[in-house]
Image 1 (cartoon, rainbow, N blue to C red):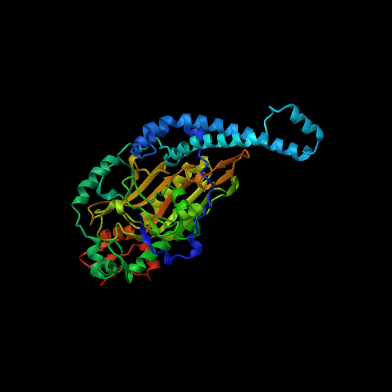
Image 2: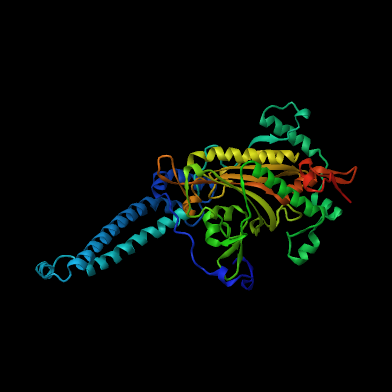
Amino acid sequence: MFASIPSSLVANSASRNYSVLAPPAYNLKHIIANLPQYADAVKRREVANHPDLSASSLQKLPIHYENYMFYTEHKKLLVELRNRLQDLYKRHGKSPALKQFLEDHPDIISLKDIKTQLKQVEDKLNSQKVPLFKVCSALPNLIDESALDSEFQVVEYINYPEQQSNAKTIDEKASFLEQALTQQDKFDHKTIVEKFGIVDFSTASKISGNSWYYLINDGALLEQALVQYALKEARKAGFTMCIPPSIVKDEISNACGFQPRDLNNEKQTYELSESNLVLTGTAEIPLAGLSMNKLFQYKELPQRLVGVSRSYRAEAGARGKDTKGLYRVHEFTKVELFTTCAGQGSKEEFSKIVEFQKSLIGKLGLLARVINIPANDLGAPAYQKYDIEAWMPGRGSWGELTSTSICTDFQSRRFHTKYVDQQNKRQFAHTLNGTAMAVPRVIVAIIENNYDPENDCIWVPEVLRPYMDDKEMISL
């Protein structure tokens, strides 16, 4: 079913199948009160064909909810009555008066009767809970009002060539770039890196398969330079460094909103066979798990983490797209930002992450654009998402380098991450995630933009040179 790694490679203790998470704390009241908005989020995300998100399933949700609440209350009353009777028998079970009272009143409910009724009510409760929670599990987050249905919006450009253009508006800048960039020389990164001997795809394809690679010499040095650059900048911005595991239990991945297969039943996750473990596609997953079951004080928030890890993507749904080179690969190094904050602070944190990413990409000298992602391209957890795309001449198009998402309380309700607010009430935290450095794609952008055919070299961005033995260029 999944792309697998032999279970013999997995320690027995690591593959024990037990749950570390309590069931999700869905905000049922909010979902029912805002059901039209959730139905709209399903429609705009174009996931109405999900078996648990059909129009019929959503229409039945209020009925299941009302019945669920009724049977929950009914069960609570029966449990209270059972406990009181048990206490009565415990304290007065040998009393002749109690024995006589029960003989005189045979119609009074017995513990046996309560047990029978409790079983019946629990069965009815589960008959409503199963379809209710099934829909809630599949239900995506709401969508920020700024997102369009199916078209992205360019918010701004990074390193726009102001000296070459007097364009003022976003549309004018887009029009200028469309014409100017198509006239550029196209240097394909795969051809360049193979020529310079800094990436080996051929041997990797024999060792591991397609979409794997060896980084060699200056290629490996460039990766480490990008990682160290991103980590240093993130630490300066107040993020705490973390190196998380790259293997997690599948329930942890699911709680983040990552599913092993997409709606077309295509593999998205590598699973370790005969275990409940998966290889993570991003450090976001274990970083989110770090706050599992934690209760933060208001003054402790926001918690800002930067994690570096290897990431693994089956990418089955992208078959046939960007299969050559470094743009879409199965394994890569990624530096990830993850923030846990109070609910009212998530918009501000979102802006801070995007500003950090803009600075990071800007200092590399890359022409890039910030885009507001449309509803039909949002993952289930994301309330709002911005990407930064760099121009990649070899591809002849823009390519994604970073993403930033507000997930509101979608993940925290599954991880049970809470905080005590200023009114001393417990609330579910908001979470955000953002890419600091998706290394292979940034390498693509640097090589395709910085290749100098006259000198037959790749110019190293100035900010990376201290991490590359002060090299100004990569050459033969």
